[in-house]
Amino acid sequence: MTKIDLLARVFVIATIIALATAVDYYKLKCPPKTKHTMCIYGTNSHPSRNCGVVKGSGPTDQEKREILKEHNDYGHKVASGEEKRGVNGGQPAAKNMEDMTWDDELAKVAQTWANQCTINHDKCRSVSRFSVGQNLASKSTTGNDFPPVVELIQLWENEVSDFDKNNIKSLPASGISKTGHYTQMVWAKSNKLGCGSIKHHKDGWNKHFLVCNYGPSGNYLGQSVYEV
Image (tube, rainbow, N blue to C red; front, side):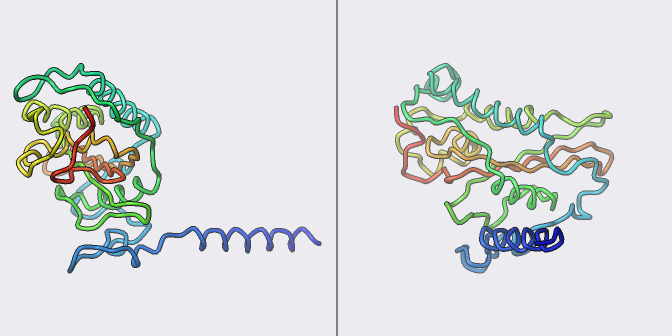
């Protein structure tokens, strides 16, 4: 076998593997009259003109580590009963909260939505393995730098001040109107995380927009956030 033949065979095998593992987002179930984010914008989307001047697309490797660490550090804080903020007192300790791990597919879908620079939730973002929850945050500055990614995540954590600890065992509709980002962060069954981000300049502001997708999704009404 010649070197060219060997390279050709390797290419064919790699192509077959890629096709076999590719996700057909068109086959995933979406709510009526909606389309999956990856079907609308494609698997190789670029930042929208709506973003203005893009300074950075996607979290850096360091930011990915910071995002994951902040989520897990805060999860440990809540799980150990050290979160003292909240309506009717601090939050109870958790028995079943897991550490989150980074998920590249969730991150890819999140980045596709972040590229649109739209501060609203997309309509369909599920993956073949599970349904997917989502947190959004945006922070701006007139300075030369961009707000650090950890500061955006802390906006979600701070929602705990409005969360009633008595709603841990059964989440009511009122429990997510002001605190849905917090409850998704600490939802015990959500153990996969992937985020996308855009740093962009628009209307005189340096803006940092963060989209984090979580799997399996949390914030199911009537279900427990975690076991006490």
